[in-house]
Length: 197
Image (cartoon, rainbow, N blue to C red):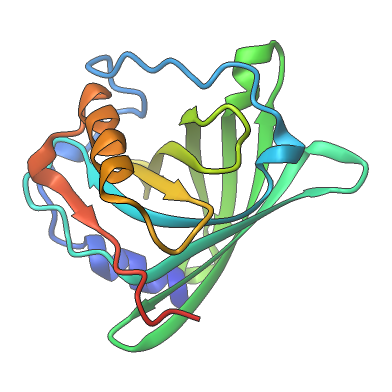
């Protein structure tokens, strides 16, 4: 719950253009990563860049943001995401329960997540795995959209690798993919992964 309170405070006061607009705005031509191999995709991912849509004043990100994905032993369509990050030298953690849409192969990359927010409210998040390397062992690009209080839309795009470090060439390539998905270069923010546990 502490983590969700932090996120609410972080996003407070951002442009009202996000009010009342549904997820998957038509300006984005979202094409999920085809045929996601869910078991290979599980494990730890470290975020290196993120961007927000239609805002112009993307808040500064936390440090040391990482995600550990695990599917249930008997069901790869039910995933638990355990997130950890640092803000103002305080460590935060959160957990999201994810259901995978697998009605046909490309849609295995379309996820619906639920977590507990402030006041024990359920927070729904739509996620689309937009891209990943062929072996799911190096990088991935993830779109997410959360509707808060049924009115406020928070859309982001993040790029992750399996390592805390990222080569400049790979960072530039992934940032170009983010721009191609509609997230402006001026709203990109790097995640500091130095001196992280």
